[in-house]
Image (cartoon, rainbow, N blue to C red; front, side, top):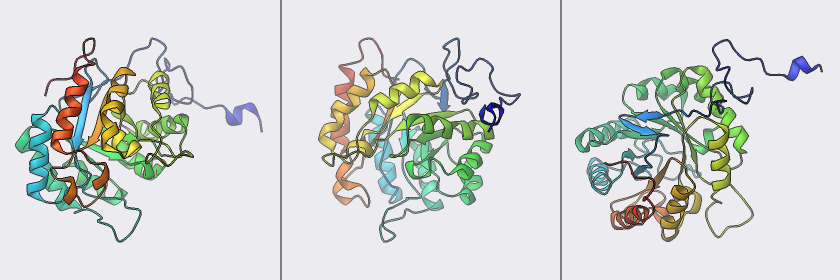
Length: 292
């Protein structure tokens, strides 16, 4: 095989200022400038630290409305919630589907929070694009290239979660698929990797997240809820994320975790979330939180 066969060819629309030829659309620029991505009017990648919060799954109109009201009043900037759930067991709650998207949309409007939700199938992309403020690509679909490209073609912002078995480089290359399809509005989300320990749900890889931030122009946030799975450790993980210079946080908050239909053990109560936000404020002397 010749060198020409394995050397990436930069498309004419790529950024010649990118340091890494494998990442012409998402890699670090030679001038060090970074990309700011907006979900609604909320900027990711600027100076303020941004917080996304909400339940694992939308369960009812009342529940998602309560969740949106509480997290918004406590300082969250963006609402999260799942309508399509990729569960390990086929017998677990799979989400409400498109009716759940409509409930999210209403809660978002009622409480003034833009929202992000996961898409699982190419067949749902077009209908969801008309309603969502941002797509989430979950860890299991990080290398579902057809889905990445379908979402990229919509031009909507995308929160791209790292697969628990993927290297940071593979994560950035997945982002390149989205950008090549048409959207550079990409936010990278670290959610833990699989390691040899089982004391926590996964291993939170802040080093990998910081590396990805340095090697790309994209905002990088952290989901410690999925990475750790233990609510009592989330305050410190959130503070570590802020101290590491990353761009934001995604946490699970449920009005009543004892009644949650998925991931009940890792969800924060509203009171827990209030304590987490207060804990973060102690670390914001030099870097402010984005005002709600």
